[in-house]
Length: 151
Image 1: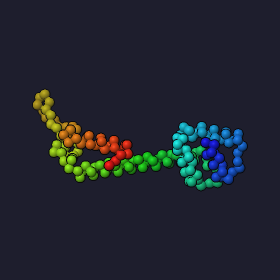
Image 2: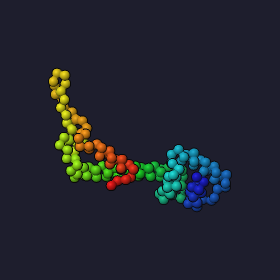
Image 3: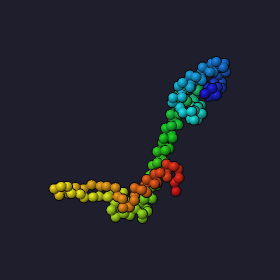
Image 4: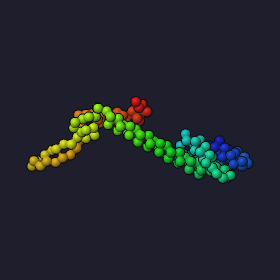
């Protein structure tokens, strides 16, 4: 934290702080940032805050917090994009693969059933189709995606 505070002061061409002032400032920054910014992202958040900083004032802890929130939002967007791409690829593969030409569910994984109640009234519903093993294949593909071992 002391290195980040020193960098913030150095980037603003401000006079150096004494050891006591530097320790106090670092403690203040740590008090605010350690609950919000994970330690492994602290350096990246500071670099982004410094890069995006527009004024001659030193980079503040609030700038670092905002930069981390932007980094987290970018990571979340990228994760969502990759997941959607994976699901689109999986859907395209499912449509092209003859493995999913099940006559009961037509590759959807759900088959329609007709059941009768105690007075012989029919009612329709859907259940998982275990004949084509669609669910096992889909679960396996999701596990491969989460471990990063995609084909």
